[in-house]
Image 1: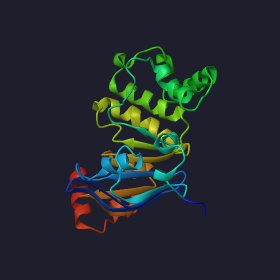
Image 2: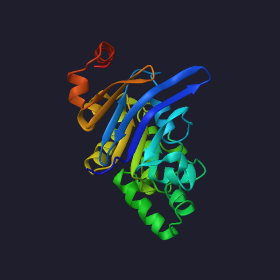
Image 3: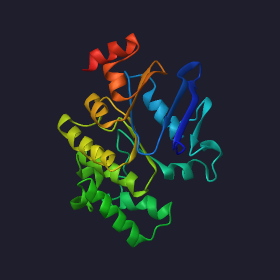
Length: 244
């Protein structure tokens, strides 16, 4: 059996005396779609930010293909080329059009020639349904299209894993479906994804692994059937009763 792409081992994170994550342990294999669920404030987004080194873990370790990510050659920038992130607030470059948003990373960081970067960007923008908007500026786009551009931008780096931090939470309800459709398509194509989400239907139908967090601890993890239909803890049952 091949080695997991990501291994999260005994991860902890504290802000001052406030411990946000405690002894978090799980693995991500190639092709996994892992959804992290839980109430607001349970540590989900902090976990994702630690995995992408936007926050420094207080303890434990994160391994990428068996290597401690804090000891990787090239540091965090080299690691983030392999583990991309899509944020709930899009984080697009508002001084660039859609095409340049998608080419700047491959050109500046990976050294991809301009023509190749533009071809790659066009392909991924087409995949997310945004190819007609290559000349638009982010401020001209609604939330759903912005998030689809953000996904295309992350894909242009051709990462091994994509992290999604509540990618639909900042969207109007009518925009949520179009973003989830793109994510379903990526899952069907075998993209390895780690998704913090409040979209329970997506977690049920698309994920092959579900992690339920409560007060900074992983209380439950397993298949969607395990977690949604056969939860082991009362806290999980109470949470699911609220969100169904």
